[in-house]
Image (cartoon, rainbow, N blue to C red; front, side):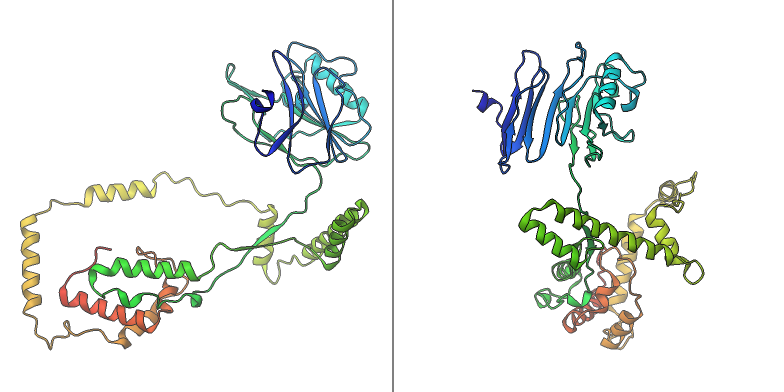
Length: 402
């Protein structure tokens, strides 16, 4: 019954502690086989050993006090996590209580390090007092060098006053993402262009076809992963560690990576020069966060307010009869227009080429969402479609709404 009740898909229950008012449980992913349960040392803790790391899950009821010593110290790499229910100014409380003092005294005597950042979210929000506290702590056994265990608190968790805390144990090598740019020349504009009649009512279909061809043929949002300062020596050390799992190889890999990063930092600082190219120097400072951020001025009148005022006051009364009369007169003039008139002649391919060449590249797209670079690289079929389309607009007098 307990196995069915406490089951979590993808995880196995390794250690648990039953109590009428509270309980403790440690789950481990199914792919971890080197995990064993350790015998309990206190009534309020349960612990496991995962590889060379010992994880101790702690819960102290609010009504109870810490014994002396507060917890048992283990001889190997250990991380203590859980709800300690102790108040101390070191982890965000305004006043320290007896439990907080007892816990800090034990930490100082046993060389245990507190993982806490005051800038992070609190781990518990009391619905009764509408305030946030930090009863959930993370302690690591140092043994001279603290275990690298950065901690992140998520802002909310459904149906609970406690918030989830993610702890990454060990040193991680960051993998950066480099964006690969695409080119408009890779788009194939001939796709299905001949199936769309060049009439004014099909302008939306033509625009949708251009955008679809661009999305299907131009790389966008593709990022290539890489590790900064990664050298062939680092690659060899990584391959050696994967084959032998020797900690010395891992240490040598991290040392080589740190040395390469240090050398790159020195070269970057030495090349920082405002004399020849101040732009590159300021770009570097902005990336490092040392430059003052650009603050937008606090404008009293917003652009939306101006636009709303213009729209509200620029619309005069509309005379529908006059509008219909203008349209009737326009159709009459367009029908009586002689064939030799310059207004009735179709556009030429030279005129279209001149117009497309005059558009500036790299500008923002218009209402239809087509960048000018797309129009510059239109093929012969697409240009012929545009010629027939614009000539049809002049023949019929029908202009698409967009």
